[in-house]
Image 1 (cartoon, rainbow, N blue to C red):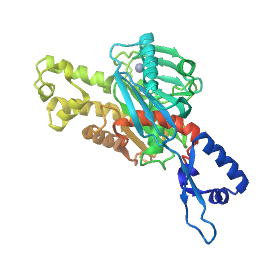
Image 2: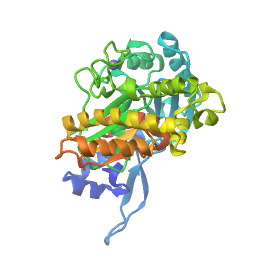
Image 3: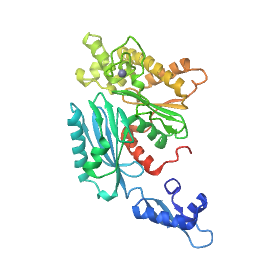
Image 4: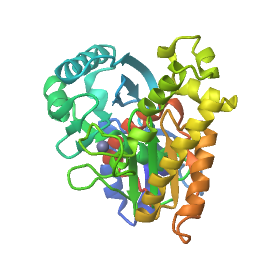
Length: 381
Ligand SMILES: [Zn+2]
């Protein structure tokens, strides 16, 4: 209540919650001692002595948010509102397996040296793609980083003595959208990301849908062609091999090396290794035929995956992010049209929007997991 409605007086808290002023006094004293809450100037008085108000001490305590993606390790010091005060980043490049884990741990050690005293740190929250058991804090499986059964929570807590949370990146992302995005009132929300991998974070009846071992939302491995491309998961025809960045890049690579003219090569200054999702999107905006054809092709596969999701979960909103789709108006518009004509008629009337959390979305998502657990945001309001 202090976080959501502060500055607020102790008597107001007692009144609104129907609890005794003594209970409020002792509870708030505890929170002040722990550094979560502080007193601010007097509030409006109705005749008597002006009451002292309480508010969240957002900047006194801090948390460490970590995002380990398939290409970057990002670490940030953040306050209780998920605002970043300091950050570090390093590309993952060729690191994988044990080397990658050692790199993450040594990056954390280095980062913590510059942080305020350890007593002010409420925890570390790490997010990563793959199947994550958030209870044990174990990453079961990430095929791209060659990680299997990594007990991240245990490793970090043992090394640094700081309580740690570990979560799948897209579960964290949909929670961040719910908490910090403009669509928080929707009880059924799906976040879809198309980047190196493809996946979904699902909020179903206001509950984050994790599944039995944390593997819910593996949209990228739903099948769109039973005779299709072999996937690194062992199956064939998985959606992600038709729409993720490596798929798009290899199509561009093949066309360009066959001599098909495209503005993409100019944008990459003639260097095929410098083609990025940003260049692909710029080429679409310039109406480059190769880029436009590819955009339309990935849209139809993505639309198909989206229709399956919508027919299964009946979300009130779908939010699209990830480097291939963010600011990619052509793809998003195509997906909207596909859904509008292929999803069940009674389910197809829903907004499909872009993420609004910006470039720090990953770190905000990491913070959201920890903050949700500590504060139990009332998500349903
Ligand atoms: Zn697969």
